[in-house]
Length: 147
Image (cartoon, rainbow, N blue to C red; front, side, top):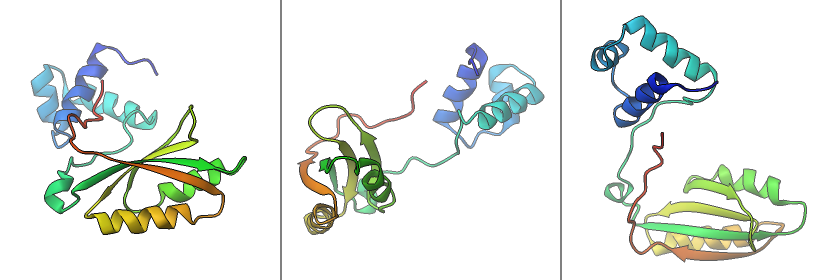
């Protein structure tokens, strides 16, 4: 599906406030509600819009540590390890990357003890050769709402 300017306007508005009703969005963009509903439904069917969620301030929930962890795996075992890691609760993102490491993940923790337990568990998994953990000191920008 190729997005036109109208689709992009709809997406930008949904990224700012996904709770907007189709009617509110139609009024805001000067279009009919049916047009908005049809376009959103098509973007959902094409998996451009995968779901709707709230943006949460993790620090206010006690997740004070963000870690970026590089994982080095045994040859041929990367995919199964990535799938296993992706299911872990603290993990926000798992990336299959180029470079020295095989996988990079971003995870959030309430304290150093939680991070330590996580890294030790991760390091003890079969087929994980080593991990390198980087602790984020300051988040300058964290926003995945791109259009």
